[in-house]
Image 1 (spheres, rainbow over the protein chains, first blue to last red):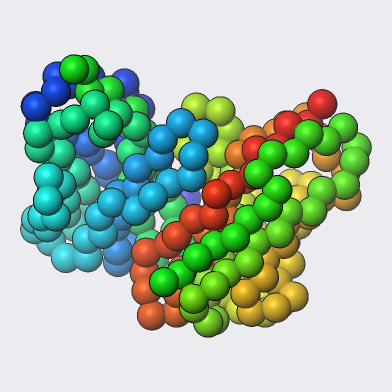
Image 2: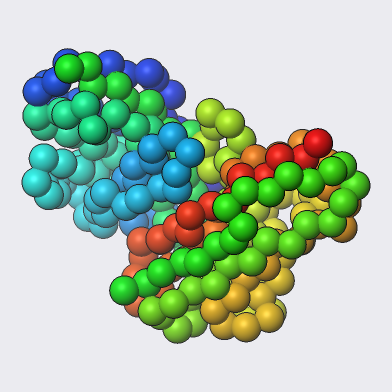
Amino acid sequence: QKEVEQNSGPLSVPEGAIASLNCTYSDRGSQSFFWYRQYSGKSPELIMSIYSNGDKEDGRFTAQLNKASQYVSLLIRDSQPSDSATYLCASYNNNDMRFGAGTRLTVKP
Amino acid sequence: SQTIHQWPATLVQPVGSPLSLECTVEGTSNPNLYWYRQAAGRGLQLLFYSVGIGQISSEVPQNLSASRPQDRQFILSSKKLLLSDSGFYLCAGRGYMNTEAFFGQGTRLTVV
């Protein structure tokens, strides 16, 4: 069974802090990994994609991938109240895209 | 850019009634298409995916079915809805040369 696991949270951080979100996956054949943000009642929107081991930075967001440990993370620097949402981790392998259950993040002003 | 159109946005259906949700794609050809269901406060459950016309892969045995009559059209159906079919249904597409998926706006289905 191909699984993507996330801590459901909720994760609460103060405004301006770093939020750290983690994800593990079971399918060693997974080639690509994604972080999506989902506001309540809305569809997910893509934040980051990462394909190779190491870090990838885009503005306040940094994605980290460790294929040996089957681990993906997302760091959000200078967290803002508008970052409050559920963050979904996804893995992709051969046309199959799987999502974790999501981590709910609350950024307190 | 790739766009997923999905309708209706909300739907209330009685138990035992049929269902048809449609999803169309713009901005790419030969996309992979996906149907997900999200129960309240839960993650995305992959229901079906399609790599081409008439090609459907089913992930979860249930009373739902999917069809892909055209390259950019993906339909989710049921002959008789159950209460447990309630949820937020999301269509997603992935362009032939891309790996990231983009989502439609979703359909919130309530079976009463």
